Length: 360
Image (cartoon, rainbow, N blue to C red; front, side, top):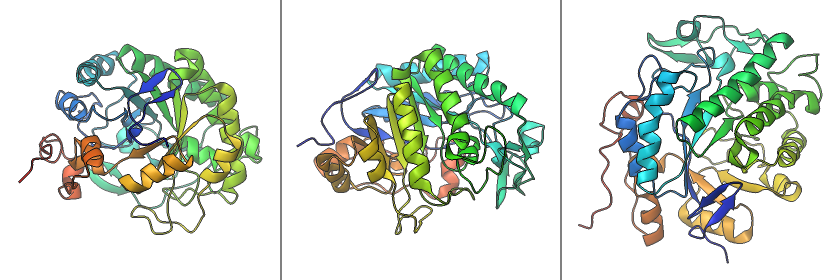
């Protein structure tokens, strides 16, 4: 039977094992969204993952809504990412850049403009800003004539990622950010070619994915989705029909893989009563499918052995376990992370100072 520790070919990527490090926002860039040297140490420490997906990286200032998140729209950012990717490759790893536009989750104090979205809506809760938490502001609907510029920004960020030394990119189409705001009917109230039907609501994601695939090759292009449940106030009334259509469209483009963040009824992060969509996608999508959602090592092995998934992405365990692959392989206990404030601090504490396993 296939296991977590068998190799996997996904598009142009050859992975030595089927454990992925999921994207984790860590906020160690500068206020100008430039990567910093400590990020090279952090990612290199975790290079035994079959594949690292970087923290979400904004494609533009308009889409940058998280303080100290490292971007991919300027030459300065590209140059600062290069030591990071070089360190990962020197340690034997592979790394994708996750491309991000936060849409209505961006606060004007971060971007200098009113946030944009699929429709005139306001996200629930508060935004992270350099001045602390502030209520989200009303977003305006993107005009149709603005959308080609969004698509072009994704394609340029993908080219920048390759210049920076990444092995490819993952388009962030999940978690209630811009693309997800277009996909799901709770936030897409448009009546033009980008709203209404499933085909129209999926149009932005498909156009972005095709543009990125044209720019860097489909075999180096992946997509992240979060089909079931509420994500930052974004949900769909018929997720199975929507995301089966999306998966089939992405398969026609020929992308390397889909990674899905599936919420669970009893999950530790955003639990939901909406059932998982991955069985329907597995039945209707012939590409590589990677799942993410509170898996233990044993559950991950069972999912792969049964054919439910081709690989499993793990997020929060990687914060405090740089040697996560080795711990799972050898049945070693996992270390607990420091409190959440250290997750987003601009220090080495809670970032690069977690040790590898040492026997007592």
